[in-house]
Length: 167
Image (cartoon, rainbow, N blue to C red; front, side, top):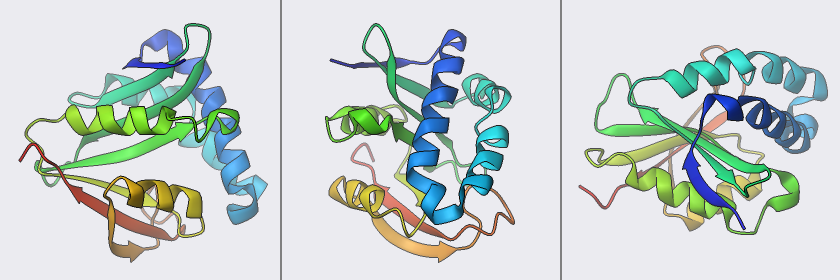
C-alpha cells in the first residue's frame, strides 16, 4: 500500500534510483541505452531533482509505502502561461505499475494548483502505455514537436492537455 506525500530532500536518492530504473526499462529500446544514461546523469541527477524540490510553486510528490518510494510526480506552473501547469514527470517503478500508484499521483497533481485552468505534459510517441494512461485520465493530444524534455533534445514529443475542473 502506497500513500502520496510531498517529497523531501531525504527522498532524492530513492527518487533518482526509481527514475534511472524506469527510464532504462521504458526508453532503452526507443532512445538507446547510451542516450538514456546521458539523460539519467543530467536531467534526472540528484542535483536536478533537488532543484525541482526547491522550485517555488512546484509540486514534487512521491508514492511511499513506508519502506520504499514506488512512484513520483513533479509539476509546476508554466513560466509563460500561469493558467497552465506542466506535469514534467510521473513515473512508477516497473514492478509496481498498473497497481493504481500512477493514478494516485496524477489525481493529487490535479488538485495541487487551484488557480490553473489546464494541465499539460509531453510524452514520447513510442511510449504507448503512457499515452493510454494519460488518455484514460482525460488528456488529449494538442500538438507535436522534437524537443521533449529540453530545447534541442531532438526527442519527438506529443503535447497533451486537459482542462482542469477547478476552473
